[in-house]
Image (tube, rainbow, N blue to C red; front, side):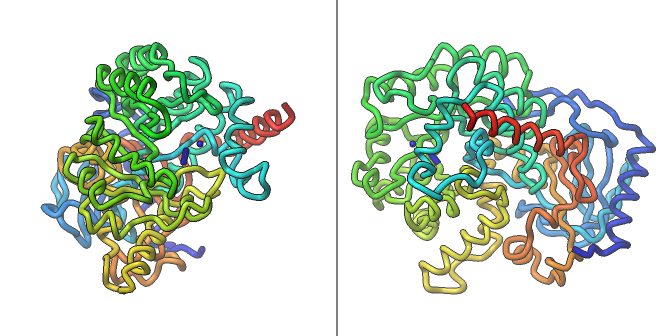
Length: 475
């Protein structure tokens, strides 16, 4: 947003199988080819380079693959080789019975750096969201952006998010950008880094286009972030004038970068018809993402759909900041490519995308005044395949499809808060939470297993963030 008790046998089988596989093949570093965040990356966790996940309930999110109770997923060098039953492969076999095996969640709009001041918003005028962002933003050191982004990425990984669009709107200097990007390199999720203007930046000044080109050259063209690609977190017509939005957009497109805009977020912005203006400026297309877009006309939604642009809504933050009710039904009825996000933890507190899916389902049914207006599988699609598609990664992640990269989440079926699981899509959307996420795999590498993050000193991460916010507030 811009300006329990576990099923012992099943859990032991998951952990035991995984541990045996890792011991058999060793913890290997797999170097895979990568282009613009679409391929493999450097090793981020232990485990075999080739394995078969066996016996889980596979929710593939691919209609051609379907759902497989007691299915297998074959992974080699970070790529999904096959999905089916009783797969034969000369590879480590990892027993994942008792889990739902699904694609990793994709968050399409998250101001990671604001996790530094998690849950601080909205207790007084001085801590209203935008005031808090500016006050903390102008004092933020490069290390503060690193600490906030790193904590957010660890939180994302823990909750089952494997891809994120980091809408970074406080890049005060090249050092700030580099510090933020170091957090991505250290934690290693897939996604997009959307380069944005700093807090308090004049609406009459163009973003630092030279530094965007530098970041592209030094971080992305060089392959330092093989699972990420670069984008522009821009400012749309109505927020800034043509002398600003036009050169920013043109420079981004010249560099081959996708663009993202907060647009029509409030009633006042809706009256400006920012989306219409973007269309008139020929700035809507498959590489254009619109954030919030609560107040759009039917014609604007048709333009979004027809140009192939997408919309990312943040139902929790949009309620808490007082924007209004997220237009889930309107967007779905208009066949807009609709995706979900947590937005900012300074306002919403939690990185739980499962809760966002729950709320999204309820908003559609509540506005429709109809219990059956939308099913939970459709909402799961918003947070997986549709979200990946909106970020230009639909052929890379978002579903368990042979040929795609192995971004996989396993959710325990026998936890007190989940059991009994009868309708799998319903259980995931209406009951699951981060605490039920047993295993997370990013690009074929195990990053969480048995409910524990691997290779991350969480105490150190938390301590670093706490020290950083204390120092910032003292300043």
